[in-house]
Image (cartoon, rainbow, N blue to C red; front, side):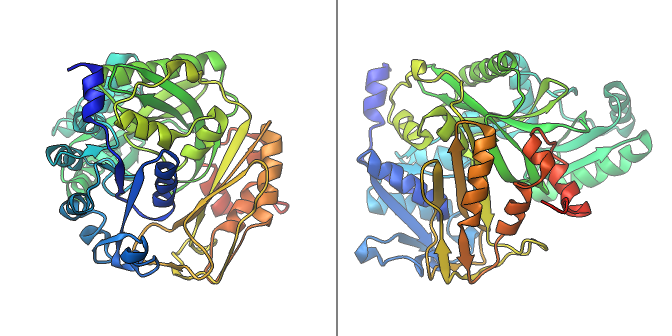
Length: 462
């Protein structure tokens, strides 16, 4: 089939937004900007805070619990059919990386605004993903690209060959679950047994793999964009090392202190990997970076929460690009150089206690966000909005962009000072401490930095 006829077949005029919160608002805005009709959906909890369907509100697809609404594939597909939507945008989380859902949409004659199911399956299995990356020349963490055998003695021998410490991971894991660090042969048997059982219970598959455990790495990501005509390009890189329990808190682009030649070489390898697996849409390659070298850990086959920092520094709207690629259009390779313009930060504002990190659902009595040059806020909340207790605690993303990293830090401090959310607790006080932390301000902190600060305390002036 020619590119022209394929693009014609994939044309659509309306998009069902299979998500909620700030990303649903983000996708809705992009659809309107491109002349597409957005079709929002909502659970009962979210529908209670939205206009009625008669007033242009969302289609209610089920009860408040995610498993019976946003994760209910049959309900989402039925909503698309009832509404007449021609495509489905999954946002992130929920069904965004579910290969079976992508395949079901295709079978139903709907366009999935994401990669093919085959690519999701490859990259969703950590072992298959590592094989694909090795084949494409992407640098990987030392370790065999094969599932671990049942024989603990053989596993121990592999660990000795790699060199302690090693980390044992579930092949289908994610989100910080299904992994254990092993520092000696005496710990191998128990670590394998516990991780295999956790993998079986959490992910439905007991397969494990093992890699070298890097002691003081940073978390650096490469954004890619691909179409179905064989074009693939890397759009930039970002640092996501500020994490708590493997969950990102602050992100920035570009990642500071990375040699441009090394970044370009790594980005090109990522693009080549996408060509080899027939990838389509946006995606993110996640790396650990230590001692001037990159080591691939996984690929996210969807839009990332932190995509705005790349948009701000690369001068691209990634949701627009997703929609165009899903329509069958070819990307303009010449428009993407991988070179960042200025520096951007993103703070994830969560409805949670800033000390205990316990979720803080409830009614927001006041929501005031900063405005001005270089400041962007992605949010769905407003005065009187009730934060439900059923979902992720993210309520807003505060993004700043300035000519230099130092100026961006100053601007973020100002933006945080001008942000007011009342009625619930938020993690705004933590962000204020982070942007006054001298080590963070100096740049290039490791993935362990925030956990250490939370345990030992921030400096007095932070």
